[in-house]
Structures are given as C-alpha cells and as structure tokens.
Length: 626
Image (cartoon, rainbow, N blue to C red; front, side, top):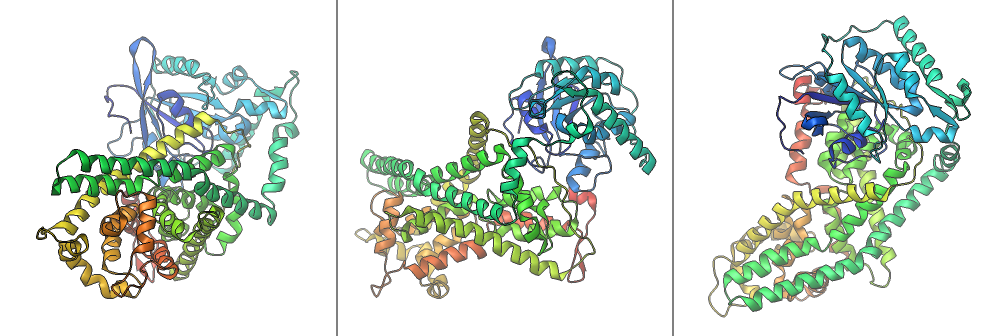
C-alpha cells in the first residue's frame, strides 16, 4: 500500500464495472503493483496511489471495487457507493474516472448516466479498444464524447498507452467548478429502459466498421471468433472439465519437476551458510542459535520458495490469458449442488494462495447465504502455506526417479481440499435458514496472449507478499523452538538427543505424546506441529530443529529427507512411515488452521447476517463494511 498522501490533493476515484480493466489502469497510472486479473472480484478494498499531473501538481487516485449500478447489492459494491457519496466522515470525490469496456459499451454506459445525473465531474476512460479489431470494428472517442457530453479518452491499461491524454483530461476537468453531488432516487422501469436505449444509440454512433461504414447491431453483438471457437472446447460440460483437470495436473507436476534444480541450489547455499557460521564463530550457544535456529530454520522453509514461485507464475499465465475466468462457468453446476454458484469460484481460487484474501474476496458475492458457505469452505482450500509441508512429505513418499507421482498426488490434494470444502459448505448449508438462492451472471473476457512482463510483475508481488507475511513468524518461531529445545542448559557432555529430552520443549512434548502416538509419531513431531498453529509453513523448519540429531549439518531438503528416513521410536521402529506421513497430510489438510485464518473467519461469519441453527448472527451492514 502506498504511503499516506496529503488530503489537500484532489481526490480522484477510479470506478467501473467488474472486468473493465480498472485495476490494470490504476497500476499504469500510479506505478503500483496491485494484483490484476481478467475476472471480476479482484478488487475488494480500497487501493490508493499518487497521480502525477502537469506542473508538479498531484492528485490522490483511489481504486474501489467494481460497480454495475448505484443500487449496490454486495458488500464490496456498497463500499464503492459509500466512497462516491462520502458516507460518514469520508470526503466526496473531486472527480470520477469511469472505466468503460469498448466491447460492452451499451451495458457499461448505464453507470455513466447514473453518475452524470448524480452531479459528478467525470471523465470516461475507454479500454479494450484493441479487441474491437477482431470484430472488424473501430471506436470513435469524439462521437461518444459529443453524444454523452463528457470527456472521453482511449487508454490501454496493460501498456499504459493513452495515459498522458487521460492525465490532461483529468487536469482540465478538475479546473472546472464542481457542482452539487447527491445520490439520485431509484429510477423507474421506464427510466431504466430509456437509459439503455440511449446507451445503445451511443454505441451505434461510436462504433463503425473498419472501412468507415456504420456497424449493424448483429456485428456489435458478435463475439470474438477466436474466443468463440475456444469456448466451444473449454466450456464443454464434459470435455471442458477434463481439460481443466489436465491443465491443473500438468501445473502441479511442473512444480516438482521445474523447482528441483533451484531447490538443490538453495539447499546447498544454506548448508554452506550453516557450516560457515559454525566455522567462523567460537563454539557457544549463540553460535548454535544463529546456525541451527535462525539460518537452519529459515532455510527449511525458503528451500520450498521455488515451488511457490512456479505455482504463482503458472496461475498468472492462466489468469492473464482469460482461461481461469471460464472456471466459474465450468464449476457453476457442481457448486450449485451445495448452495454455491460460479460466483464463489473467484474467492475459492484466491483461497488457494491464502485463505485470508480469499475470505476478503467473498464480499463480492451478493447472496449472504452463499457468502457464508464460501467462508466455511475457504479454510479447507490448499493454500500456499501448506505447500512446504506437502512438498516435504510428498518428496519423502515419492520415488526420486518418478516426480510425476508427486505431481499427481499434489493435484489430488488440491482437488481433495476443494471437495472437502464443498462438502463442509453443503453440510452447513442444510443448517442455515435463508430463502436466498445464488445465481450467476458473469461476463467472460476475450482470450488474450499473456504478457510476460505483467505476469512476472504479479508473480514477484505475490512472492514478496508471501515472504513478507511468512518471514517474521518463521524467524520468531525458529528462535522460540530452538530456545525451548536447548534450555535449561544441559550439563557438559550431554548428547543432542538427551539435551532436547531434558529441555522445556521436551517437557511440553511429553504431555502431547499420548495424542501423537495415535498418529504413529512421537513428542518431537508434536512440538513441531504446535508451531503450525502460528504459521503452517514453519512446520518443516520446526521439524528440522526438533530432529537435529538425525538431520546432520544444515536444514535443506536432503537433510530433512535423510532425517525422516532415519528417525525412529525408542524400540527402533521407523517413525515416519507411509501411514504416519499420510496422517500428517490429512491433519494439515483438514484440521490444522493458522490462528489468523480462524480469527478472520470468525469475524466474517459473525458479520454475515445469516441464521445458523436458529441463531441470529447479524450485526448490521456498518460492521460488515468496517
């Protein structure tokens, strides 16, 4: 998020329907690096940046959630309406930049009429004009500007083309006197009909054939030929679902295959770092803390970073191409069986990165019951925090010469998490008393060639966010576990195994041992699992610390796998078997939730306003939006 900007600068709000290219334009205008994708529901909160104008002037540019009309239904649409009309202590925008999709002019211009009638100073930023050529169409900004009596500028959010003209239009409009702004009353049916007829007239006047002749309505409504042909394949009820599973299987298999060289390099680097610290510093508890606790613990998690980067990268390519938007259509029918719709696909997809932003994204769902069901399903999605755990255990179970087995197993875990989440949603749906029924109205974007720069930038942003979010807990938990397993200090000559057994961590583990025995594990694994309640991704590092005596020098993937193969119960039987390892996977998949996820889920469900088993949890719309 950008640093706070002076409130003396004019406030410009970027508004538009979902999937109009609004957030891409925000990034191009401000240089921000917020996540963009070509399906609705990405922007679910404010994003503020600085907009540089001529002669050193500046303005505050705010990107808000998508809005179809001023009669907002979902919580995120209400956020946008409140922003526009200055609800509470908020200030009314000095200017509204309305982002309009050139391929959907008639539908998007309805919001322009509403904002104009409310009294806003406004500039229309028309995007997606490059897609009109596929339909043999050409857009005239001058014709639309003359017909609607507003400044109109063509811009390209992905390349930044046309942003200088938009800057000039914004500055010129800000120089005009501002009028009174008031929320208009709900329009009558006849008024809505008249506005849409006017929008269609302006569309016909603004779009012409490439040769200059006027375009008939059938040409305006014709879809992209390439998109139409691909959708016949990808949206097929049977074949489309098979293709989706095949693509996901290939993606997860590549996580094992492509990440292996980078993981080996990171493994070697951290092993050198551990040995270097131990050789450079005198033997002491501080040296062991730095080498084994900090460097070794952090290295046990960082070694899985290549897998996370590859996951984000491939998902970025699929998002930018327009394919993942079809997922909502593919899963709409199976989701309807548990009370959800394809609208929940975007939040659930976000949950595969992290459950917390996925829960935030549920605010795009208008139906409150569907929103709650999505919240119940979200914690069971296979988030990126589980990937280091799955990566370690699957590497232990998978033959090195057959990485495709690990890829198939990882695909199964992702599909299994989705299945269990939907099962939980279906069960809770049966307990809820709500007459609402979810429905899906979704605009599918045209297929486009992914831009490597955009995908790489998004991947870098996601990876940096992951490292920033996980880095602190990893270091602190590694330090805490090392302290628990090495204090109080053992007498000189005590072996590592006995030292851990006499420590505070050993005493805590003994309390957990009866429970861990049911899973085929011992107290050391139990202490490592406790750390997972703070952040699941620290479990491999915690495991490396607890089993240091069997782990050898360093805490890389090879050392951890060697430790898992040699770890044993007091009677000599192997500790990590296929059964106990599978039990760990099931526990992390279904039972273990980080504390942040539990807190966010509890608050979101309490603010949902849906009766569960007859209990009214509704706390009002103001609390829901705070």
